[in-house]
Length: 93
Image 1: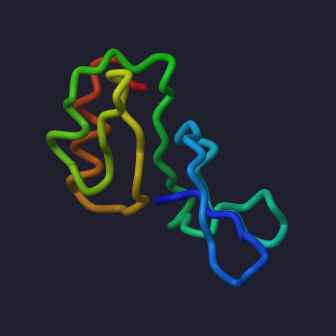
Image 2 (image 1 turned 90 degrees about the vertical axis):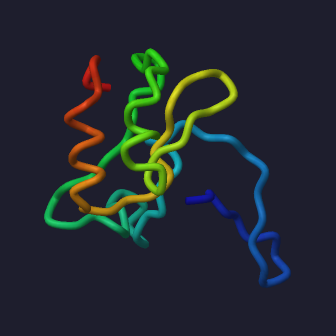
């Protein structure tokens, strides 16, 4: 998921790197996540992440490792791989 801002010309672009909890597409009320399913939403507390790679190895389509060695949620879905990745996190971040 990329955070995109309108540049006024009808297209979207952004080079900003945001924490995973900030990298969320919101509804018009600017409070409700657009892609929330049954109240479940995955993000990583990047300050608590120890960089074990478990989440990125188990569910690479949903998590990636950053250059700083910490993980980030890049896609929201309710697959078993994501659930397994969350369960495998040794620090529950």
